[in-house]
Amino acid sequence: MSWVFLCAALIWLGGAYVGLSVARRWVLTAFLGAVVLLTHAIFPADSPLIMALGGSFTGWAVVFGLVALAGGYSRAVGWIKARAPKAPVAEQDGPFSDTEIDRYARHIVLREIGGPGQVALKNARVLVVGAGGLGSPALMYLAAAGVGTIGVVDDDEVDNSNLQRQVIHRDADIGMPKVFSAEAFMRAQNPAITVLPYHRRLTDEIAEELIADFDLVLEGTDNFETRYLVNRVAAKLGKPVIGGALSQWEGQISTFDPAHGAPCYQCLFPEAPAAGLAPNCSEAGVVGPLPGVIGSMMALEAIKELTGAGEGLRGRMMIYDAMYGETRIIRLSKRDGCETCG
Ligand SMILES: [Zn+2]
Image (cartoon, rainbow, N blue to C red):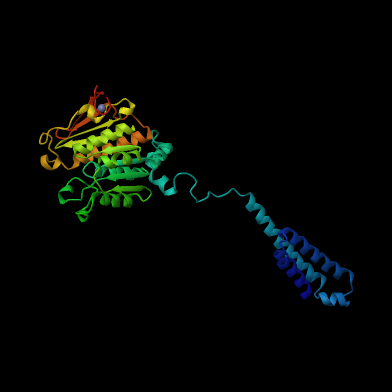
């Protein structure tokens, strides 16, 4: 009996060692079974060959019958498995993970954004100049919307008096550079995006190189020097600027894009007002949620700009009068002789 099992072991283990296919090993096993049964059928029970093999014809018939059944069952299962429809593969099969598709589902179902729009947001690079009142909500909504790369430039630190309106910063962030506080919020809100913080003042030396690295600029500083600089450099590079501004109870927003026929900021305001004529937020005050309204509109215009949805604010300025709950639109046009784009 042991000879038969030795031969079977040789077929399966030795066959595996020399790389014999499973099908061939089954053929050899069947051949072994046939030889054993044939020997039992031909030779008398007391012959030395039968004694060496051991067992009986019926016993071996049962053993090889069971082996044949097991082999047949395993082949049948393999055959069914090979023809079964493939289960969906869990690995990422496109630009988005399952988590991202779920997160941006409310965008993806919008006809004007959809899958292609969401991909455009993911591939977009947006620079936000200023992480203050307007920058805070703009950055928060850009991060939440899945804008793939968000740069933020600001040289300021979080101050206690900022927290009445600059909602991206918290009490615990007082004293921290605003760009790092904003970065921490955005990374926590959406780990799938890249945040590039620049803790420095935007100056002539770095503006061109920095802005050239982005598709779109959101400008929300209350510093005229920076505002004119962004306008000049973005116009030179042909990049659109979504600009927001605030004063006390009133906010305004427009898209400046002289490369595409729209006026630039300097078309409207040829020169900065004399010192004292245009007091900033810290001097004149500003109602807390107002930068939230205008900054959120800036993020919304950015999403429209990047996805091609709707109609942007090129050549138009929206003015929101919070005191009376009124909104009006004024038409803007390029100014002949504009120092930036004329
Ligand atoms: Zn201009």
